[in-house]
Image (cartoon, rainbow over all chains, first blue to last red):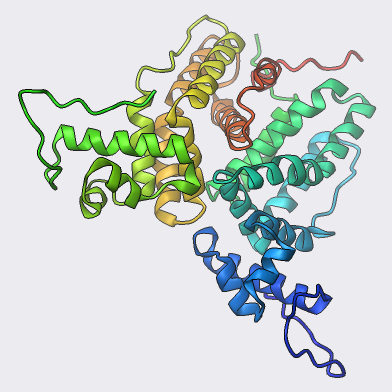
Length: 204
Length: 204
């Protein structure tokens, strides 16, 4: 599961300096990724990342000014192309497939621990809060926004409901991440039906 | 806003020993409450609580073995009778009133900062995660469960939907707490309609 930095045999890396070389950056990210998976948020420190990567702490801080930046970098590196965006032509089916893939991705990859760390860190510093709310959230909800917007275009919901449904979907998924219940996938289908506005009303 | 411990003039408190006296406990809780409001999760430490309360660190740990226990105690002390549970006979109206009261309470009282701290702490230690999921959540969702169960009894939703709707409601409210958007109350009403299953479907 861990990704080791590969240095080509031709080009021997001597030490990680402050120059932002791809090798050095990969070593720092790999160390950060391993550390958050192994020790979680409480055991994560830039000191330990520096030690494992053989990098200077000030160098790391120059590249990633806050822990939040490191968590976002871990998430972003892993996230690309890991969770496919379905397009079945049906809102509930799309939401169920996408949510199931994302929860499994969070549970199986350091990205899940990194997101937990980012949310926790955001409770402590205004910079992390802003990174989470103003940078991470808009970027990382683009896929579910597309699923909902496509459904609105097909007439499955009203366009003005998209933002609220994104909030419901994010809140529900974060809750399950934050309380460690990503394995309880049986709740996904009924809840996605409710988010889609298809909750069954009692027979009158 | 801060609650100072009152010691009666008749009974002079000399020092806070390990005996769990009401005065000593109140002093510790008041110090913890002040500290979490002033400094937030990142600035919260048992060391500082002990210093402010004039109590021993080991004494505090004996009463509250983890930070999570302290956060729950702060929340519980403040929460009692602060947020009325409406009973208008209409699910959406009940949810809107209750959610508005709760968000204002979270924003205005140290309990909101304590809950943010509890959620953050739960990302670091298994004990805090269990305290949050298995102790705090069931107790603290009893009110919204009653609102939803009463509505199910009136025929406004089906009884088997209650748990999923609680998850949607908790997830949505936590999201707004965790990203610092409790003041954006205009989202409450449309989202509560969606949770109630009253999202307007497009005209076909």
